[in-house]
Length: 358
Image (tube, rainbow, N blue to C red; front, side, top):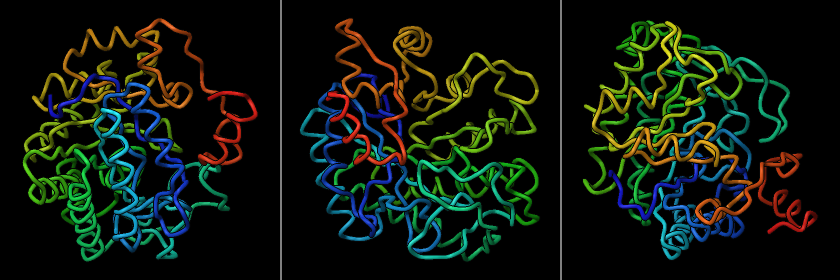
C-alpha cells in the first residue's frame, strides 16, 4: 500500500467553496473534514486547493495553500484528521480554463484559447459564462509548475501525508491531455506524447521536491465537469500510455474517476475502466472513485484487493459511512437540497439543522 491507512474507505475530493475571501480555511471546514475521520474513513482527500497567486484559483471562497495564513489553517485541520485516526491527502488544483472566480487575475490561462463546453457550475458561483482563456506561455507554465511544487512542499511541512495532483474533470493538467482544450503546436501539444509531456513534467518536479515517504499521486479521467461525453481519441491506448508514463515519473498512486459499467469509457469501444488499466499496467497504488456505494463496495473491494475506494455523494450523505456499512445500518442517498443554492458548508449545516440530521 502506498500509504499506511487503517482501512480502504476514502473520502473523494469535493468542492465546497467555504474558505474565507482570502482562501484561508475556516473553522467549519475543520468540522467538516474531522467528521469523516470520526466516521471511520481511513483516508480523507481534500477538495481542490489552489496553488499559485495568478491563475490557479477557480472558485470564490476556494481554499489555497500559497501563504502562511492558509497553511496554518490547514495545519489545524490535518491535525484534527490525524487525531481521529485517519490519514490526509491534499488535492492540488490549477483551474485552467474552468476559472469561475479569481482574486488575482481577470483572465484564465489554458493550453489554448478554447473555452470549456457547457455552462459554469452554479453550485460554485454565479457567472454569466466562461471567459476566453489566454494561451499559456512557457513562462505561465513554469509559474504553474512552480506553484504545484511549492504547494506540495508546504503541504508536507504542515503535516499532510501526501498530495494529489488534479489532472481530471477539465482543470489545467487535464486540459493538456484533451484534444478539445489542447490545440498547441509546441512541445506540449499535438501527439499524445506531447499532450502528456507537461503533466509528466509537473509530476517529476513535485516528486523530486518532497520526501520519499511523502505520497505523490494524481487523479485522472477523460470527462470534464461540464462535458460528460469527452473521450481521448486514441481510446484505451491513451490510457495505457498515460498510466505507464505517470508510473515511470514517480507517482505513488493514481486516482481514477470513471468506473461506471453503464458506459464504454474509451473511444475505441474498449469496455475496460481506467482502474482496470492502472491495475494491469502499473505497480503503483490505486484509488477508485465513481458510483461506489453500499451496493457494489464489496464487489470493487474483491476485484481490486489492493485499491482504496473513494466515495463522494455517499460520503456527503453519510459522513459515518464506514461505521454504518460495517454494522449493516441504514445508509441514505444524497439529497441535493443540501447543496443548494450553493454547495457551501454553511448551506449544508443549515439544511441538516432544518431536517434534524446530524
